[in-house]
Length: 218
Image 1 (tube, helix red, strand yellow):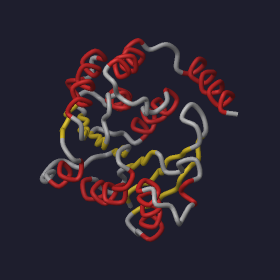
Image 2 (spheres, one colour):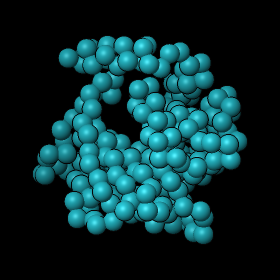
Image 3 (cartoon, one colour):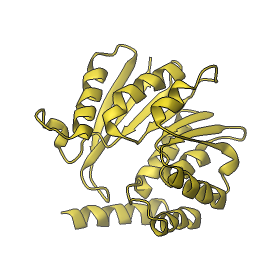
């Protein structure tokens, strides 16, 4: 089944995305520099691009840069004068991301902040609100990241949280996996937080069986 999921993703990318030298080069560079191959798929990247455009985003927050593959997609969605702030824990990952962003011609729109995301978020005060937030980092802290996204957003801000199904692991209430515990805590938060409208969608494809949360600040 996994081979067919990959084949369908390849078909979608071939029909709707086409070749993209900068994005392909980013993935090659990531691999050469030892980064884990956990970027969003091309189809998911295009989805992020379109959702950010639909939201009319002029300021985007990304939590979890890795090598900047999704960052490139999101930066391309910004209008002239738009800004993307992306948070990355690992200094090496941030350096690779800067290379990839420069190669893609979007580095002027992107501010990479290095360090624990919780600390970077706590330091963000007095900034203009974000219109779109993409969370793709350590799942055990997702509920906190959403809380901070609400604080740093505005009514109408769009939130996307990746990796919330984990091949069905989200159903395991007895799991000792911190990522699953954190994901379940996120769903518990979303189920009771009156500040958000939210849903979640399962996905299959190149990234196997997973899913994402889509939410909007009321």
